[in-house]
Image (cartoon, rainbow, N blue to C red; front, side, top):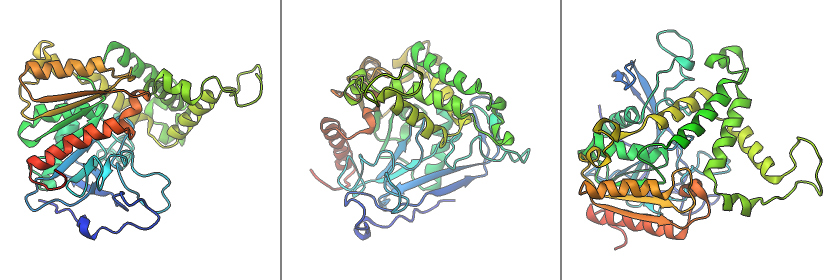
Length: 400
């Protein structure tokens, strides 16, 4: 059954005075329930599941202006706008989604969801297992990028979207974009892959394993059944986030932001927080450990590790990309050492070798991997230019 989106037309969009004029405004998450079983790559099946999502803009009569946003490891459905006037920060990609922004909601209808296995409303480890009546916990099956894309295609069916004008994602989200182009080439008109890689390096897998071991070795982890013990593995999740956060920033960004600045006037000669960077990392870890589920973190990092579309083609990425049938925009950032420009170039070279249309830009940025989340003039110009071309090709109007 098709569910017709109920988003207000942009012409009638009312932005409270308290919110920026280029915001999508106040948004309300929606839930799509699926009773059709979903066969997973791990060999298990989810008998039923929920996907939580948000939409911004208006789906046109031809249903040709839909854009799908795929989130990264710690992301979720709330990509733009505000849930209430009391919300301190907008959605995680608000800098790029909204009227007049790179993903212009005056022209595009944007869909953003929380992936399966997540902890922000979609079915995952904190959901109830219908077979046992208890939370899934560590029994939630392993999910892969391919599984996410299959579930996203079902959501598109539910919304009556046969083909996306573009599928867009950064980091782990970029991997999902690649999978869309391979699994559903006729359902994606354009692909935007930002700060991503066609597979993780051994170093990246190692970082993920350190994070997982930090969580699994926490005494409060209880083999993943921590909720039944009325506790959380906060220490392990905090350490995992601290390790991850270091890899998302560049040395220059950390040096510029913190240097060797002390919180006090001199050394304390102890193990309490002394440097500003220590305080920052501990704050990030504490905040994350209170808002994210540890089992979800384990699942998401494994999905990262498993992704490698070339593996079934003898390691030949160009052969793996053969089914793709849309133009690509690939964006990397100069100081991203987690997914460096060389990995993006590997993807671009394979696309060229496979005779695919591809545009590539490496943005000079001091912000490391996190640069894909931030507004930067050249990044925004390239991104907006590509999306304007998408709009023109689909006769969606807007600037020429």
